[in-house]
Amino acid sequence: MKQGKNTKVVKIGGFSHVLPVYIGGENRIVIQTMWKDRLSPADLNDAAQRIESLQAMGCSLLRFAVPDIESAEVLGRLAEMVKMPLVADIHFDYKIALHCMNFPIAKIRINPGNIGSREKVQMVLKKAAVRNIPLRIGVNAGSLPLDLRRADLPLAEALVQAAQREMAIFDEFGFTDYLVSMKASGIADTISANIILSDRSEVPLHVGVTEAGPLTAGVARSTAALLQLLSEGIGDTIRVSLSDTMENEVIAGREILAAAAQLSDYPRAGRQGVNIISCPRCGRYGFDTHGFTNRWMPKLYAMDKEITVAVMGCEVNGPIEAKHADLGITGAGDKVLIFKYGEVIKTITPKEADEVFGEELDKL
Picture 1 (cartoon, one colour):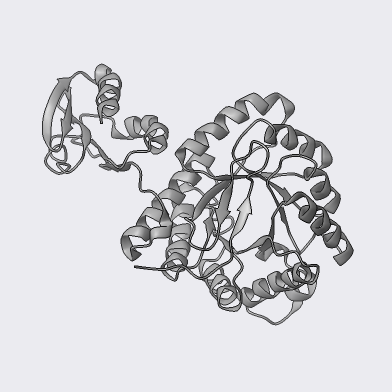
Picture 2 (cartoon, rainbow, N blue to C red; picture 1 turned 60 degrees about the vertical axis):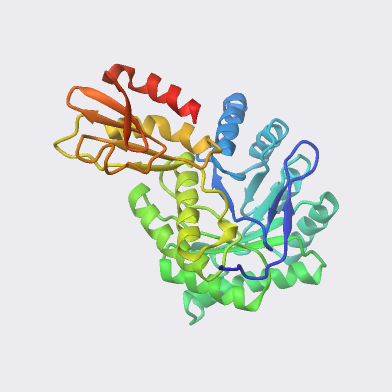
């Protein structure tokens, strides 16, 4: 059985109404994502509902860009409305970080390449210590400190050194409640940097490929990097960075962890949940597998059930190929078949498909 690296544990949230999330040690690997748009006061109710949906799908942390004090105020109001721990992502202005800590915002991310002097960092650390708010040292290849950008170093080593500099400041001031991320858009650099720091430190690592790309390319690149790291027992929380929806980032993260669990028998990968198998569709299809799968994915990934659901296009790859599925649906000419464990239980019209499938799903 694969074991993770011996990292320290950092608690995020667990105060006021905010749920606690534990990262590091033997805790399950945490999936997180990042809000895609600028948040406005008018968005708060809708945002709270969407956060609840993301949480049901398996997201445990949600990060927001906070470019100014006004954004900090809005995020602070949202943090008062939801149970999921929210994270403020701060660049350039340490005062924004200080202001965020006036609200039940559960974690602060700062970038050592642009946050400013030691004195400014110390002010952030002092307030975070008083408020019991952990920090993430977030190092990106595109915003390294100037001297490291100019140094003749491999990018992975430059990322590690940038992180270690900030870690030294944190440790000097006695602040140990932090995580580290080192992200590059290159797969090899991301893997190397995290392996290097994992060998040098017990700090929990937030891992992912930054700016990984659109859905298909981004999932492929993120999977290549994350499976390599997870197979080494490296990584305590993951984010799949896609030019796509937050929901797809969470789904991709869940599937990567599921693959890691299958390949390495890795208990920290967490719950499997619903396993969706679906055919790619071809000229034989009698059922719109693409549209049906897209409609049902959010609900299926929100279910806390260990089941396999099959969405198949025709008789060729229907009940027989998916006979191990707990529940399946497939096309058959101008009809749709609902089946369980390879046995057809209902023959219906395409218009009835969603309703009948939902009824059978609820019975599982």
